[in-house]
Length: 481
Image (cartoon, rainbow, N blue to C red):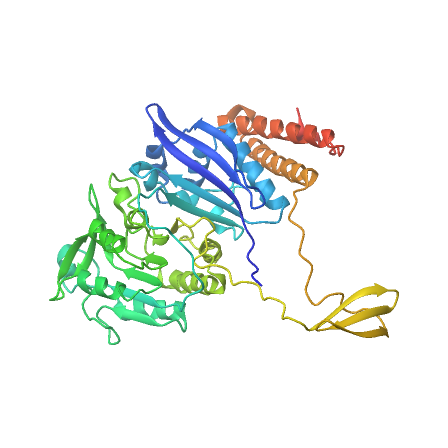
């Protein structure tokens, strides 16, 4: 039987208006047929230029981006509600950042550095939070899930022999192949590139396209990529081994015309995740392939070191192979890098609603006939074998049915949810009171004072709700002034 556990979904849809950025927060519960709009048309205080000052420090960058995104009380409250609901129902929380296709400046931001506004912990390092990006696509081909396929991977490593002419470093093809092999384990791997086991020794666009027609389930690309004002340029190879600069648009066109595109594309080009804060960031390969109709694209903002790749890639593939849950697998693999500076580098674009690459296996059905024990009266039980009664026996009941009872649907305990929400607000309050103690009231930043007031307002709302439910909360001295 499938052990898949549906996540609570918080979708943050960002948009651009004539006056600036706005956001909507929408909550989807597995047990509900309707979404809840927690916040709508909320003005955002995003300042991409101000984030550039922290470009070399992912922690400071994430703190600044989190402060900007959750500056509005409505969005902070939406976050707290979603977090509390997921925690109260013991479910993971999937955070979807839905970005407009034409907002290059929003795509360029390093959303993977976001932090929990209450605990200040990075979302990308929490195995119970699935942080993904989504992108609107005009692709009409449905993204459908079939049974678990026979997994096969295609690896393309482009290493033109004249890269030095363009001031680009040569790639270690053998090392790149080996780390992907180590990650995939026994999964069959087709190689394109200058390697002894390659089906084509030249990583040309033609060779890549021909290999994709064989319908691999996983596509991995390792190549140099550079951004222009309008596109991403891939440094593939020509037939003679020299550099062939291929526009990202050409690669996305290849995918858009495939009868059976791969389930997952993994892009390990140098700037495949997007050239941060540059005008051409939308044309980076990740969102471009998502627009072309790929169900899932995992792209790297930067190159992983060999040590980090040796941790991230095997963890990712091991977790994907377990149940096909790509968003969960990415969260686990990112968390494996939590003590490394590259924990924020992998970015996941996801079109599938539930994050799975294939459908769950159907539960086994009970065989016809068999032995079923029923009708217990004290220690006397009736035994039926294939529909025929064979009398009664005396004994202790061990099994009441060969078929387990159907579980009741999940219900949400409103008291537990409000108590969890109360604790979340108190944790937020404690964080800001600690900040206030470090700086003193005279030097407190405006967002600290605002955060304290907002947290206390949330505490008051949760306590009022608990009182109305007949379960008043204990008083804490910091709950109010």
